[in-house]
Length: 372
Image 1 (spheres, rainbow, N blue to C red):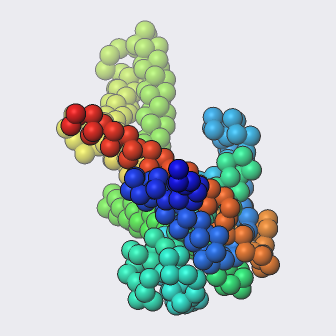
Image 2 (cartoon, rainbow, N blue to C red):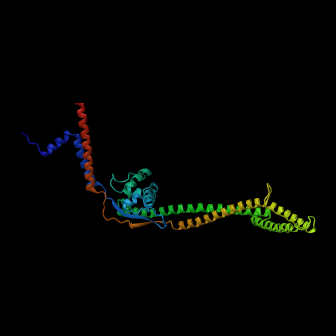
């Protein structure tokens, strides 16, 4: 009886199943690559938080802030900064400044490097996102920035450039918004100033046309005159009534009083006609038109004052809307290569290969059952 060694039985077992052979080869290749071939990558890490110099008393809290316990005042700014640090424009800027395409295409093993120093924008950004990680820590409320490169110096340079450019971006954006607000307010002030000047000129033209500084004051003077005439008329009528008690109707004194009463009544009619008359250009209509012009002028002046106040407040806000990117942890110069995590990555790949092999074996079994 011929004895078969364990190695021969293993070879025979692999030959009987091509899937098992392929799985074993894939596991071995994966282990060889991750444990021996994969190039070391150095990771530089920094932690950032955005602080604003603007002081707003109306701070609000949302449910996410209450649950996480983090300060949510700058959460939107930090998420915006994260998107900018991951943007294609910044990737191209860093490539022009640090020659990232040349570094990532000339260093490292053939599988992990950037294929081609003239890679397209899309391919370069996809590779850039694999080497630059920007994560927002919801609990601590900080941005965690990790950059990978094949040398410690380049990893640190990328991280430092991202921190510097991120701070410049936040300040440029804040200043642009503030400047837009100031420009808008300046335009409104100019328009309202022109409106004030126009309304004041209309008021002056009306005064010159009517020959009156204040129709209301003139009306008050006429009303005072009418009241005085009414008092004089009442006295004369009382005197005439007293004389008619013992003098004849055509007595000289009674005739004189009648003439004075008629003159006063005529004068009163004339003065009252100046104040008001049906369909006439009387002083009450002049006073009403003057009041409308004066009201419009005052309203335009109040709006102008409000716009001036808003403009000064806008300028003050523009001077204190700086967004400072505070670095809680400076970009470090790594000493040891922490990527790739060789044992962990090898284990993960082996598990994935075995799972895929199990799925393929199950499919083969299903196909054989259907053939039978």
